[in-house]
Amino acid sequence: MKLNDKLFAGMRLATRTLLAQGPAVATSAIQKVLKGGAARAANEAPPMRDINPPPAASRAAPPPPPPQPQAPDVAAMMRELVPEMMANLDSAGGAAFKMPNFEMPSFDLSGAMGARAPAEALPGRFIDGSHTNAAGTRSYKLYVPASYTSEKAVPLVVMLHGCTQDPVDFASGTQMNQLAEEMGCLVVYPAQSQQANAQRCWNWFSAVDQKRDQGEPSIIAGITRDVKASHRVDDSQVYVAGLSAGGAMATIMGTLYPELYAAVGVHSGLPFASAHDLPSALAAMKGKFGKPQAPGTAIPIIVFHGDRDTTVHPANGDELIARGRHKAAKEVEVEPGRVPDGHAYTRTVHKHPDGTPHAEQWLIHGAGHAWSGGSARGSYTDGKGPDASREMMRFFQTKR
Picture 1 (cartoon, rainbow, N blue to C red):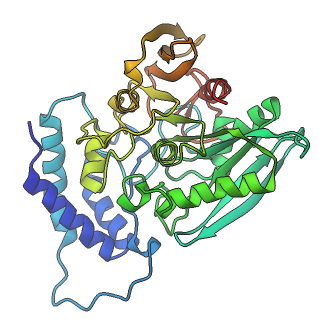
Picture 2 (cartoon, rainbow, N blue to C red):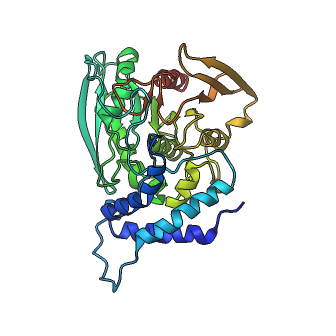
Picture 3 (spheres, one colour):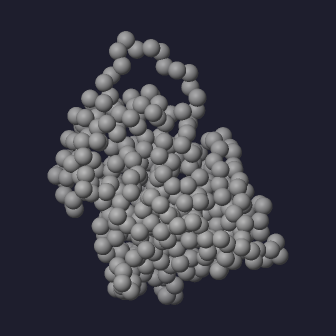
């Protein structure tokens, strides 16, 4: 069934009105609309959400709009349009799906938000930095392992956190700093700001943030180049990975900057340009995609997704592989497995004619929207899954 064009036009009007009134008004109005659905699911802990309307103020500082005789009742518009839109999406087919919440309360997984164990002491340095260009300023944390010297070029991994997370939280949950010590690589964690997005989501569904040398991609690429300039980095071993909204942004970075990143890791993320505004973002998160953009270079990619993810539909993992034209590989290897006392999984490897992997897809059975194999020291992790961090690093080492 085709989604209602009139409905989407209404959603876009509501979105534009919200953004014009600023992030506080936008978030407040949408939260009020969604509270009804949250109350009905009071016994279910809402999942991590992936979208938050990017405030207009993060792009520029235009003069305030002239006063209007009567402001539109945006909350009423949203109350009318959101349920109808979700009903249309449901009627289009697909697995049951839950409306994403605009808050990030905890859910019953090891590593969910709440009291967490203190961070493990490591011998390396976790230093602060920032990058500024015409698109704005973002801070970052850079982990430098104790073994690092300027005498040898080392790999660099760029890690993009999910909504409401920050670099320290994401580093704790993924344990990438521990792997940096073990493997002798640098890891940099760009930080989204609340000025750019109230929930600290990377703005993966904003058109300006899907273009090379514009918006957030230009800042993340700038951070990557800053680290390369200040440390001795192997140009052939620079990688980018992320969770959720960060996973979607990692896909954007790999697509826009194939000369900068040798491979991409996406956990519970979405394909490049799968959305351009709030309505299309909600549809993509539900597994409903528009016409894909013309494919560019097939990016080496490793994808993780839980088959019980109700925030970003697992179909997004399939779409990432399909859009990368990896399914055209002549050799495909499917390997089932299970973590001891944990989740079962299916690993699908798409190989080059010489047998080297070009893409991997891990479907984790019984897992939701959380970093697989992560530590309870960080938020939104599931320790019962395969170790996504280690498997990503293994895959990255085949791309140099």
